[in-house]
Structures are given as structure tokens and as C-alpha cells.
Image (cartoon, rainbow, N blue to C red; front, top):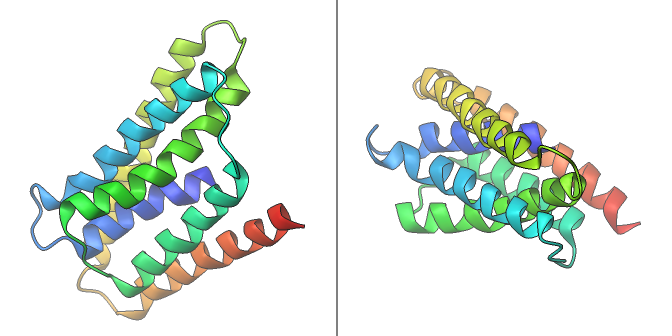
Length: 155
């Protein structure tokens, strides 16, 4: 679920960006930054309600954004993905709480997040002028994953 969300952020950014710079980077940078904030919150023991349902909801929303190529103002795009990133980060922070070397693990997590965003951007950039159905199928797959996870977290 985390992998799909991070690639979807990059994919959506590339598909929806009006121009390569700086529009393309607002959402990925917001996600990476807020993921770190959320992870630090989780390490500090902060409890947020509905972490797993919010992670699943992030996949639903991100999948729909990819499938529809909806363009949002940069600040709105950053806010949407940033909110979801906090929940992804809190989940990781809780997993790392009490572990030796958590700071190094967090650095690796943020680095991997940026690389996954870049992979999504590369994929999205290559699909910008390709068959319109390919991004829709990719978005639908992320939506399906999100729906499956949401149904499992509610039961």
C-alpha cells in the first residue's frame, strides 16, 4: 500500500502537471516532507484515529486522481497528499518506536520515498502522450487496492 501510494503520487504529478517545473514537484515534495513529520509523530507516540483506513483512503483518492488526471492548484495538491502522508508516516513511526537506529531508518524511508516518486514521475511522463487508457488502468488498479484494503480495515 505504501509503495502504490508513493508511485501514484509521482504518476499523478507527471500526468497532471501543466509544466515540468515547478508544478511537477509540489505533491511529491509535500508527501516526502509530511511522511517524515508523520513518522516523527509516530516515534513520539502520537496516536491518530483511523490510521489504516486513511492509508486505504489515500489509495482510493490517489488512484482516482491518476485515472482522471485532475489538475489541482499546486498548494491544493500538496495539501491533499500531505494529509495522507502524515498517516503513512505515523504508521511507519509506530513500527519503529523503540528501535535502535530509527533515525537512520527514517532517512532511508524518506530517500526511498523520493526514489519511488521519481519512478512514478518517469512513468507518468512517458504516459503523458500515450494511449489515454494506460493511466486510467494504472489509476483503477490503485483504486482497487485501496478499496480492498479499506474493506479489510473496516471489518
